[in-house]
Length: 426
Image: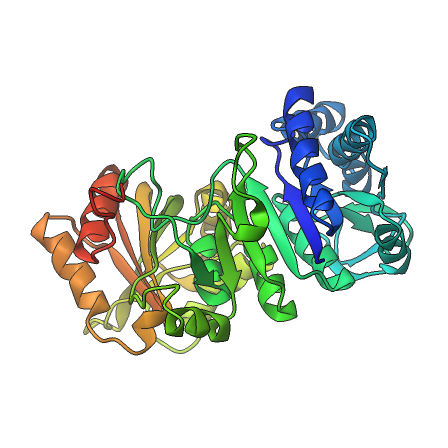
């Protein structure tokens, strides 16, 4: 017998028929003798609808009241799933964020989980009850409802798993695992049996939409084994216990899988792309101490994340050009802030380009294997794809290219690193 947390996203909960399908998946898991807690998202599109209501009511809405409105989507699905499980003969009850409670810190609409009081929840599960928990929500120090930001239900599920000492956290989505790249772009993309926390964290941060970044970071910190699998399966599907999806595990467990022959050692795990980047160039910035700080301090104060940064070698005149990227959604704010600080920074022109994309190659094998970056650069050069910026980490190389060349670049790199599935496997 195991203790398992199961999380279902918005597409899995979109309507009564899909909720019934989810209820059957949950019921089967409990029937195998496991203690089960379920974390659910709002129905697909529901959070957007509620956010629009807030904007229509008051463009300068109070974040605390915003949280009250948008958290209601998960409350509805948790109640409906509990009712559906009861109709199937299961003992089930919902536990809202304030009933556990899920204690959070920081601001409304972007709160972070501090702790979960899981004593009553564990006792309920030990009595054979299925606990149904709305994701995305918690309780502030002031006793107000809070929400965790978009994708927060993944984080809720991992946090619940850590709090109850779960053996595994199953994240059910509309895909059946983590692939070497987006299978809609590369038909020969392969589903991975396992990836490390570190790899998944990098993949999530550079564009892979499978898991929310904060949830992966929390899983790594708390040592929660996470499995990604599909809720859109037939009645005769392999049970989740037999791992039909992708396991997110520690590097130590990955090494054990490789030694046992369950996994192949590979230098590159996956290729991600992100079209939500925008490039900013400031020309003729004074080449002196403190100049770059004047650029990035106002952006940091406005919580605008800066990714790739390139500073050219100073010219004879003591000037340099600085290039960096920001999320597309923050481009207008970034422009306004920089124009406002033009005198302090001392730049000549501000040039922007939102028609760019970031392509990233990720893999823990890069730590001990030379040549991954050069393979990337040569493969792109052979197809005349120009690289506008480069950034690296220990297990990642990212490049900025023209948005129109995104799909071509992903296909070229997927083949260059030998990630294409064989014709038989495909």
